[in-house]
Image (cartoon, rainbow, N blue to C red; front, side):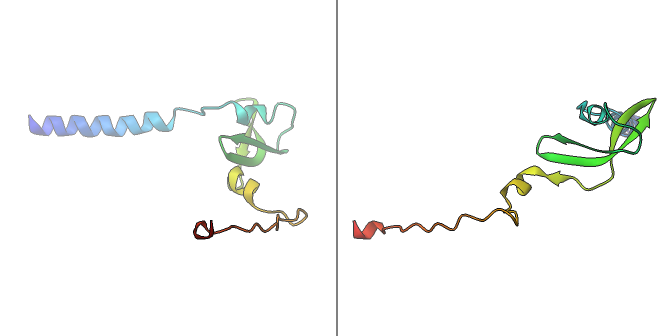
Length: 100
């Protein structure tokens, strides 16, 4: 009886992982990124704080943006200074609380 329970638990664990892996996309952004594009044309889309870049590929006769470059974190990119934009170098003086 104990062997049957263990085998049942293993079977359920194995089958549940395959179901999760085939759940699909949670966003329509990859398809929207290629609505006005052709096959192999560059595309990009954003989800949450990440930007995905790739090329438009045909999936079941519908174009979809397939990522072929690393994901970019948009928050990191927004906080990094650019070469053309000067950084804020204004210095502020702070009076210690002991002098007040």
